[in-house]
Length: 234
Image 1 (cartoon, rainbow, N blue to C red):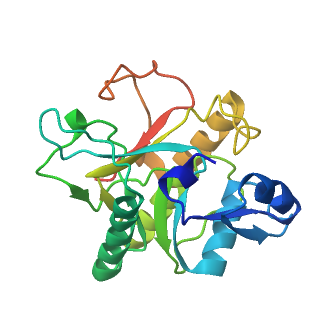
Image 2: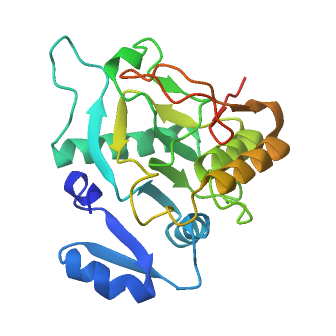
């Protein structure tokens, strides 16, 4: 479990039938179980919000935590578990203070993408690998969707409340989700990605766009395809 190396105090949330297997390989972790009838990430998100109310959710395959506000030759990877937890808790407290119910770290993966004059945003999507919820009537996922849950909840909350807090000072780095086994890999393929993207566009209109190739701070992204999207809130 890669993420536990970054945040050892994180709770694992797994199906009841998977408890023994997870306990075998994570003997020191706190494990919370949900009914086996809760299948898929979106139903699991809804179950966790109903049962915990306020929480910060992390994918299980996070490999690094980085800060983007660094000087020349200063290391950007944070390995100290306490500092990582402080960053998460600090963002949670900031969200509560300004009355925001959806919050998370940005998707800028290198310091060259970071704008020091705009460290925070109230009009950006959260990224699925790491974000938090302060539960209310608007923080609920439509379970007819199977993928793109981060775009779905971002659009839902922005439409209902007009604010999402994102912090570009820090970011989590994730393993390749298309290649990793487990998680959403059984649901994720070209056809299902396209179907969910089309439905998002139908639900939320022109803010949902096809994402073209571009520079991500290290290399160019893949060319335009039918299931890669971006969301922009004006």
